[in-house]
Image 1 (cartoon, rainbow, N blue to C red):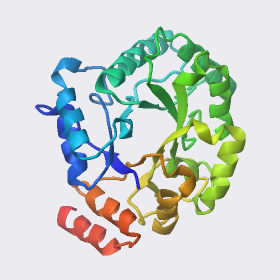
Image 2: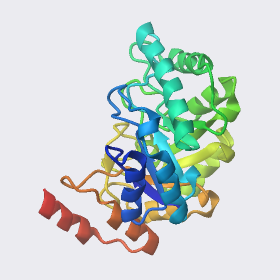
Image 3: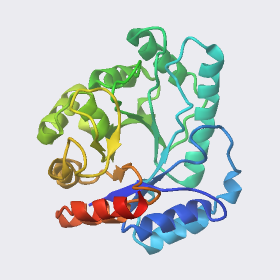
Image 4: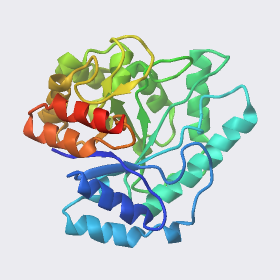
Length: 294
């Protein structure tokens, strides 16, 4: 299994420290932000200990295409109401693409955004327009549009939304999709029939466009359109269904990244990855973490 999790990137070790954290959890994949997701402040790439990170990954049998970068939430390419926000989204997306390429990652996960006070059709059109205005798409990097839960005015909670965006971009070779299990469950898709979900994805978008999976349980009932992640087996999807996603042969080559919540102030990833690899669920260990760190 190609299993990873969201890890921190902070001084002084930066990307090398991110890789060390992932290895400590028993992961062979990882996802990181290149800086705080709430702002545009970023350190120069020369400080990020990229070569040291690559060497560490090589020594531990980790492939560079299994290092995922997530774009910050402040990028909203669907916003047509505030031109200055849209321009910031374009400029910062260009910067994040270059940083992703400098790190050596293949995938930059991007939320399609929210149309705010307009409508879905305008939001999709705005996303396409904004993505087509990007000055340069680095070779070897794909923007993976993430499936969303559908809260508020989010775009991307139906596969058809992403298919329309992908059909409208001028550089389709630079785009793909990241599927989030919590999000699509909240959007109404049934994870318990994951092969059915993959069939629908293939019909609407094409499985060749699926490059990253976010493996999360959900605190909400299917179709709630709320987006609240839960730890494995602690939500409405359940461990068995999520383990089946991790084991599904049709997406065996796709990295699965955990974004499950910290328990107290402690990451649960070492235990959750161990459970997925063994196929044996241990709710008690997560509950014990909650008692100790609550």
